[in-house]
Image (cartoon, rainbow, N blue to C red):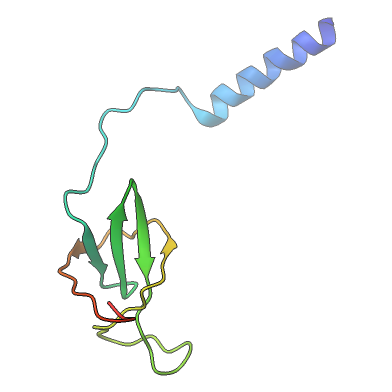
Length: 97
C-alpha cells in the first residue's frame, strides 16, 4: 500500500512537470462561414456540425495535384484545416462540387 501511494505521488509530480499547469480555456474560435479553401493543401473544407469535412480536388489521373483546382469530389473525410484557409463560394453539380 505504501509503495503504491509513493508511485502515485511520483507519477503526479512527473505529470505536473511534463504537462505544466492546467488552465481553463481563454477563448474558442468558431468559424462564421460554411465553405473554406486552403491554397497550400489545394482542398475545399466545409464546416458542418462542429467538424471540418475536407474535399479533395478532382483530377483526371490519380496522384496528380492540380495547381489551381476548380472541381472537387463530393465524398469527404474529416480533417483539421491548415492555418491558411479563406472563405469560399461553392456551387454543386451532379458528382462534383
